[in-house]
Image (cartoon, rainbow, N blue to C red; front, top):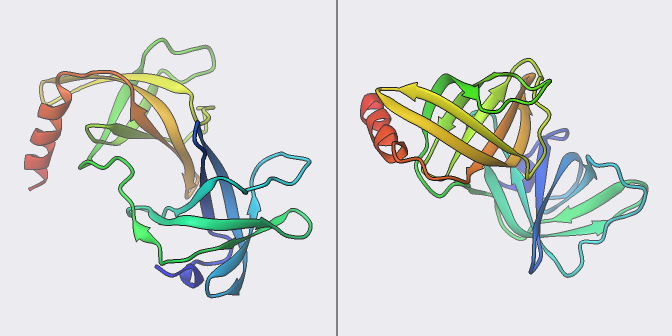
Length: 201
């Protein structure tokens, strides 16, 4: 996809990578300037302008229900007011963040060690060998990048006990979606994914 094909108002995600750490910022596409340059507004609370010098920045767009698109090594510079200009040097490519096959689940799961104010049950959207995602229709979850969550469910005679670290958050038609990177070992996971794959076929 070309940058110019994105609609104004589309939600974007900037992944800032330094030698020692990674950081994610949400943004909104405000206006197209050229085919390869657009104005964006960052969705974060900061009183001072951010500098994107000496870091690598990738930009991601998540079409509803489709594989995310990513533009690698984009250039982001300060613009007037609270806006920034982003320049891309290639077309957006499909990006499977997990690098492994994911299967749809759509099953409820119990939240382990649920804290006060946290729901005791969530809906698992999909799972792969390296990650999973959940949906929150009621807006009950308050999670940020880096937070962890442990979930448990049984399906096809398999026991899935997963702990994940939040790597992305997005909103689709009023539903909040959280993507997790798996942090523990679950012996039933590979067998479960294989069985779900065969069921889909």
